[in-house]
Structures are given as structure tokens and as C-alpha cells.
Image 1 (cartoon, rainbow, N blue to C red):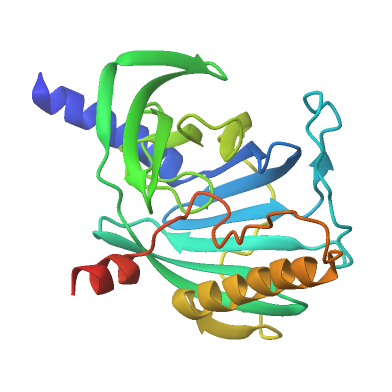
Image 2 (cartoon, one colour):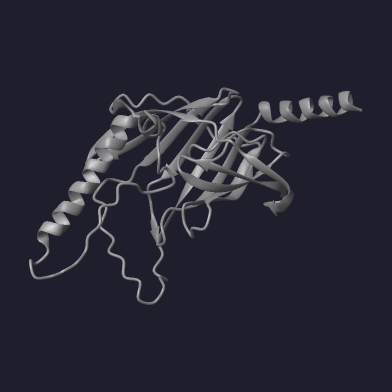
Length: 256
């Protein structure tokens, strides 16, 4: 019986190993902004492409005033490139920018320690999904993955479960959410899985984080300086946006 099950699983895996999979996720980026992220998998190659076209939700709660700065950058896409493997950490190469300069960033992401809750299930796009929880760089995340597509991948930099992640979010927040809206298990799109981005400077994740935080803090400092001196408004610096709140080198340095 066990041999038969293993044989069937191998057949199931080989089916997806010879096909390109495309998952389209709705990414709730903030309380007012959403965009789409498209994940493609072909064999061991993985690339996730985030659309830079952000939709702003005007249906905000009464009394919630949010100022949204206009984005002067040209419409572009952000890429997250990786490979499927069983290593304790996975190499990710992704594009982003600081100020107006574009970068191609290398990030080695540790595999989250997942707790799988087998009895908590739901269907997503017709697939049977199981709940799992983990801490990902300082944020508690909740995911639903499916054994029916036995590929250890997901949107953004999420991975490490024995099946494709179709829904993942930071617990207790109405944003930092990725939710699959469509799945094509035999996509015919032509996708370049190893873009070089020769026009972007190559840097490591730590350098990128430090530059990005310096940029954000400079914006807050400029905002404070522009306020009338008699106007008492507390403007707090926010170093971290998004799901990544604590990085590995910070934990190591704190321990030492």
C-alpha cells in the first residue's frame, strides 16, 4: 500500500514537473492599496512578478485620513527569482529601488519553521488547503497550502511547506495579504526565469535595508522640519514596512 501511494505521488509530481504553473495573487499591500503578483513555476525554476500598478481603496473608515504621495516613477514590475530546493535557506534575487535608483538584490531567506494544523482546512479555487503557521522575519504568518500541487513555493519570499501556498497573510492585520485569485497548471506563457537586469546595481539585502531605512527616515525628518514651529504634531519614524520586521543579522548581533 505504501509503495502504491509513493508511486502515485511520484506520478503526481512528474505531472507538474513537466508543466508550467501560473498563480495570480491579489496582494493587499496596505490598508488602502492593493496590487497583483504573478507566480510562475517551471521545473525547479521560480519567478514571481509584482505589478507596480497600485489600486487605491477609497472606501476607508470614517475619520481615517491618509495622505498618499504620488509615485513619479515609470510603470514597471518587480521580480523575485529563486529555485526549488530542500536547503535550510533559499537564495532569492529581487528588484527594487531606493530613491530613484534601481537595484538587483541578493537575499538568503531561512526556511520558516512551520506548524501544520491538519484539522484546519478550507477550499481555495477548488483545491483542498491546510492551515499552517510560522514566524517569518519577526511577523507571525498564517498560510493555507495544498498537497494537490506538491511544490514548496508561494508568493513573495514564502516557501517551505509541502505544497503550493494559495493564501498567506500576517496574523491579525487587514493587509500584508496574498490571496490566490486564479491558477493555471498548464500555462503556455513565455517566461524568462533568469533575468540578468544588467542596468541595475547588484547589492546584498543588508545594504538594501540600510539604504531604504535611511531614505524613509530622511522623509520623516523633512516632514518634521516643514511643520510650523507652533504646531505640536508627533511624527514618528517608521523603519519597517511590510512583513519583514527583523532580519537574521540583527538577531545575531543582539545575541552577541
